[in-house]
Image (cartoon, rainbow, N blue to C red; front, side, top):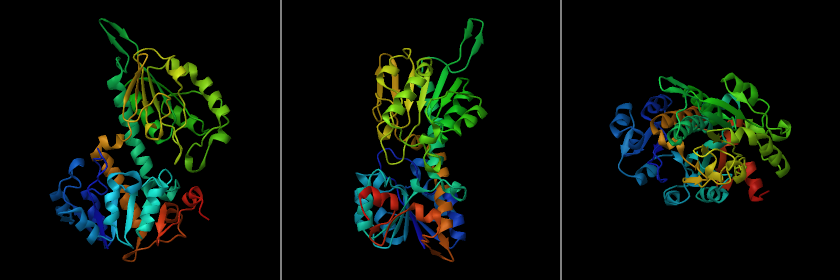
Length: 384
């Protein structure tokens, strides 16, 4: 079987689905790798490095789609709604696509892939179970985003993060508040602490307190019943308006005292919950910075605008939507390892096996044999 790797066409996307070091394990497992020329350049991996590892480099995207039985991407059609449409004419029945595809957020794109006759496996649907940890691309990319969010905040903040004792006097440390302590939030805590900030954090999940404290940060209680806020797979779930209001009220003081706030709360396939109202932002001191990692789905801050910088009464609100792509070398290495582990999981006895009795395969599988087959997506579409 030939695994095809194509250049990413989403605007600003610099990652690549497989890096050169991924090639040897695939060859050992009986697969071949074909690469669109230039696919890895933006991430720091030129064609010659892939060739030395045993990959074949093809001149065009169309050649890769024509030669490969499986296409590995960072952003498949659902996560690349405009430029991704061009791939529909290249996909053929029976071909398999692996990549981020946002099927819960863009079900119509999944239907288009189904209509092409291709099999789609969406990386964001990898179940959060022990066996699948090495394939969990969402966690890998969240690690990168949490790291980079703190650097963005440090650059925008008109203060330094650490306490400094100098001959000219003592500078007090910045106060950072992390809202949502999944993988991105925990990485943000660790990074802010490394830079010398005094860090506090909050989350609606009961397990978060111990994790926050283990990183040396203070945990701020949100007054929300964790039993009603914890969803499946380690995710939080949407709160009703009353619970959201009580949560915001409980966190108002911590918000007002913060120099930096990083918000990370997201619910898969849903609009991001509002954690920071305009009123709460107006309680912050001029010069404070908010980095909203949920900007792609509307943002956790009422004032967030995706991929824009908003300044409101002296408070700067950043809404980046693709931070992992700004660290493309390491982000690609992490993502490629996730894809490689999924491929090795699916490839048995010399062929690709889609075994729906296996939880990892079943939960990741979106389309097959011309149909949308994922239960949650079918339910969202109103299919029986």
